[in-house]
Structures are given as structure tokens and as C-alpha cells.
Image (tube, rainbow, N blue to C red):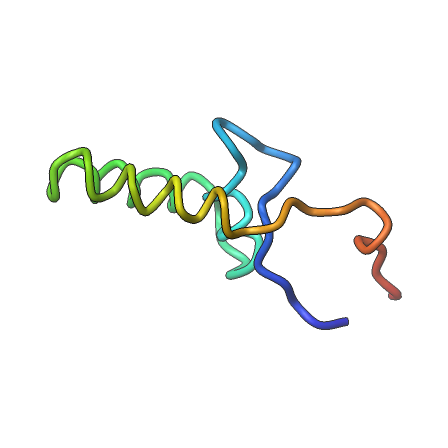
Length: 71
């Protein structure tokens, strides 16, 4: 099955963007959240917030029907 970058419907804090990215890269969502907070603090809130909002709009939400995996 092909990997897709999509918003997660599990481990959601705001919109599932960072949890979806963590799942795509097979990492812990906490690492992505810490990196996002650091990015927000270093660049000022606006650029990071704008990137997050664009990702929220662009990334599709995970669908239950397409989520099954064959083991």
C-alpha cells in the first residue's frame, strides 16, 4: 500500500496535521509538536501559524475506508 500524507484522526491536538506528519515519517508525534513549538518561537508566531493553517487546508483527512492494511 502506498503511503499518503494525511491528517490524523487519532492523537489529534488541534487538527491532526503534526500527528499525520509523524505517522507518515514513522516518528513520535511529540517530536513533531516540540519542533513546531520551537519553530514558532524562533520565527515569531505568524510564519509558523500560517504554514500550519495551509497544511490544515491542503492535507486531506484520513478516511476509514482506505485505512486497512494487508499483513
